[in-house]
Image 1 (cartoon, rainbow, N blue to C red):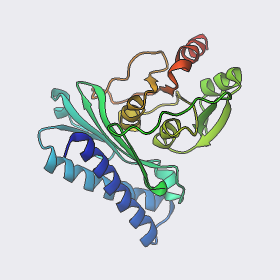
Image 2: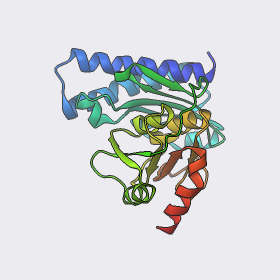
Image 3: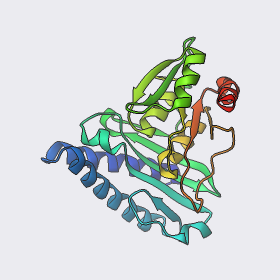
Image 4: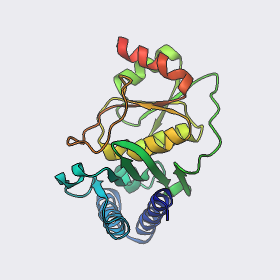
Length: 242
């Protein structure tokens, strides 16, 4: 398999495992989320060690080591992005599998198992159409201050949603137009979404306009902008003024 095919297969397989666990166990809430994180992580890590043994690996659910820093190719995974949503029986959660090459989000797959969808960097779907009235995805519980202010200025509709992957894929799928996040994330939260979004012709950057860099010693990557290319400069300018 190519790297992209492998990313998609692993994301889909982990998603199916998670659905089976949710549908066939008595677990709910936090217990279900923890069990899903553990089971999906074990499956993904084992597969990558077997199929790409020379590559580095960074996972939210595994102890990080410095070994990956000396490698040009590093897989960055989030076994359950949106653990709370998964545990609550919602659909807005995801599985992230990405490959960063020399720090860039080169390959990615984001599975939305509850929707039966996997978005891939090697198989772009039709480019999303930018509507006249923009829509901005935000956190269900704590929308970023900058996002709310920018939405007001742009007269954009706020669309509450769960996981980072679900939000990013809403832009790819044409269900929303702006994902502006400043509340704190890590590399595994946005590497696969960024790879997929870029492959679909969308703008992806930090909120100061700088490029997204992965496989860093400090995995904290707190902010992100995904949007239509024609809106990026205006949004970045508004954020800078804030």
